Amino acid sequence: MTTIPMQTTADGRQIFTIEVEVFPRFNANVYVINNFGKWFIVDTGSGRDACNQQIEQGLAQIGRQIGRSLSTADLDLILLTHGHIDHFGGLPYLRQQTEAPLAIHALDYRVISYFEERRMLDMRRTLDFATESGMTEAQREQLYQMRQLFRSSYRSMPVQHVLEDGQTFHDLIVHHTPGHSAGQVCYQVDDVLLTADHILHSTTPHQAPERIHNNSGLSHYLESLDKIGRLSPFKIGLGGHEAPIPDVHQRIADIKAFHAKRLDKVRVSCQERPKTISEISLDIFGPREGFHIWLAIEETGAHVEYLFLRGELSAANPEAFEQEGIPVIQYVKN
Image (cartoon, rainbow, N blue to C red; front, side, top):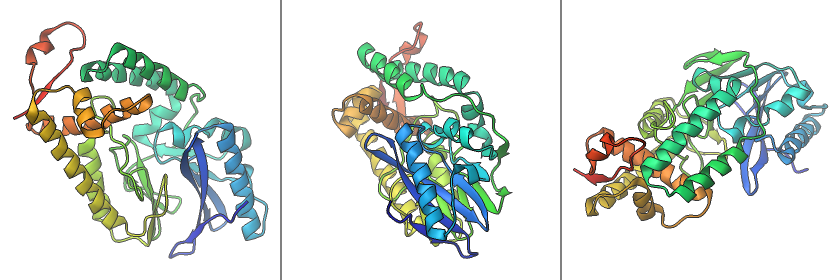
């Protein structure tokens, strides 16, 4: 196995990056922190067999690099950045190997410990929003089947530590950064920031409307970007996916500029004629297939919600709200 990349913080802690394939052709980063002889793992991959094996192989390679044996059985702490399956799905496997305590932010606690309940609530809100956005019945059925498939392998797990914003936990500072997920956190390790899916090197993290997920949404996300932007500059940022981020503050500026342009595209789309979120997503992303149809609608919905709440968009068919069931809403620029 190739050498595992490693960063050394200002105080001498070591952070190793294990890249894993969480879904076919989609990778994520699992971080292993050597906190002066205590071993912390940050995120656990998706739980796929290949992903679990890559974590084991990565730990063994780290051990070879530092001259000792190292495996999942040696872990002292499991830290989660947020409650998305590609970051916590490996927990059932890790629990077979170690009793290391688990920590996650309070607002994603229920995702981990009450997964079945959360999945049912999440599915109901998702399908309601899919109807409201103008997706066809066939598209909604396909969405339902795919989401069931993605989440079928996980089961609820107990959480030993519930984290809060600003807390110093085992020498790491917890920065709550809701938006991409309600309970997402960035972990500050001295002068290095583990940015999770809040800030990525190349892509802008996926957004969903708060209509589906409480405490997510574009408003929360932009506020969280500003929050990290007010911190002192970091040596480097290490994201939940992709390459290291050499300048976290510049990347924040780039992401904010990107969303400003996307909001402009929504304004233009809704100025032409009243449109559903599904129709607006076609203007922004073009035709999509499979699960990417939903991702485009979710991302579009986050931007529509942002403008609607600020009075820049209105419902063009308000009478639909008086109908029974879930109405299909059209939006128009004020």
